[in-house]
Length: 323
Image: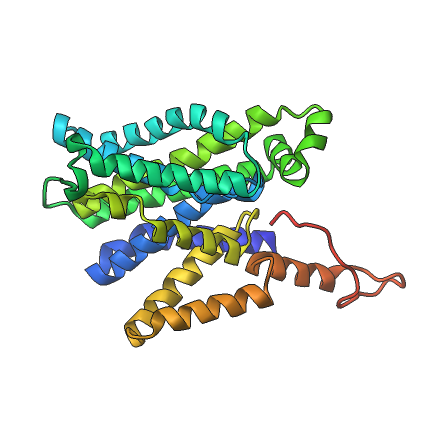
């Protein structure tokens, strides 16, 4: 089953690399949005899913990456990819002191604190004349979506690879120990502060890199879109729906939600938000742990041997899976 999964993933990667060369602008834009949300979901999943620090403010780093890219392009006329890379690195650097302070908070206090950080960043961008204030900044026109798509695909692929490493490494085990009980993890010798801040840095660099590509694609940056609460909330819901704290959950949730949302918007433009919200509520009630953990649990029940050597279909209650 694992081999079949990796073969499917390799096939999907080949398609993602070559199909965009032969599709029109609408489908390319939809594919870009899907890959963008996949990357954002994986960035959120590292700090919130593995470390257990639920964050409502990762969009702050997305906006910082966008504004850094735009400001550098206008000031230096460097290639946008270099500017976006610098924006991602800046987000990682800023995440060190921010994480050291914010991660002293726990539970809802951390979530609210990160939300406040994102809103503070939005207000600062709105009031800064150097960044265009509320009117925003206009970048040079004529940008093509295809290079931005490949940039976003590379970042999302890197986020998936990092998540795979976390899921199979001692570092990932330390993060999960912190998620389950931070006090006990500390008594067992886990350097909790170091592990948490490291996860926070990774989860800041990913949206920072994605924000740079997003800014170049739009050729316009303004505070509301750069620090969009809607984008932040969607990436959170996608991760939860797919399965927070799992390898495949953000991918499944982002792909499914993006396609369903687009289909509903195209067919029911007046009522798609109501229908979409209703579907999400139903799915989260039926699958409270997410799609991927639900599938893994069902497969584990089917393959668990019974006491007589047979196969049971639904008696055991499995522990948490690492999918």
